[in-house]
Picture 1: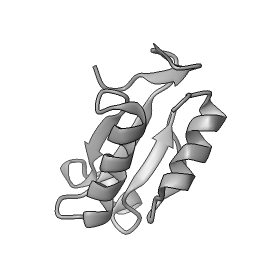
Picture 2: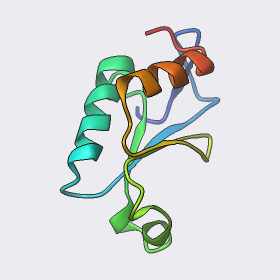
Picture 3: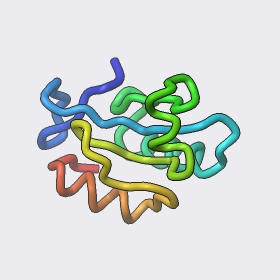
Picture 4: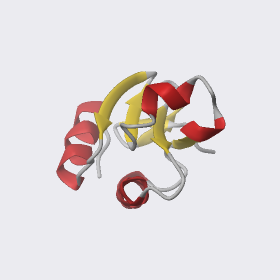
Length: 94
């Protein structure tokens, strides 16, 4: 199930990693590919900001955005080294 973060490589429901995206966003696709490679497709939630009227003004010009436990941690452009640093900070071995 998406939405589980990791503690020393073990899935726990304690933290939630979210990738905020928009349709037809190549940077969003790139960020999702990187996350899939690092933690797998079930290791995070994907939220389409255009499907939520409250999220659209907040994220429309910033996607992709990676949030952990509701705190925005990375935004476009998201690179492999950025994600590796965040995963290390979260205790995820990749």
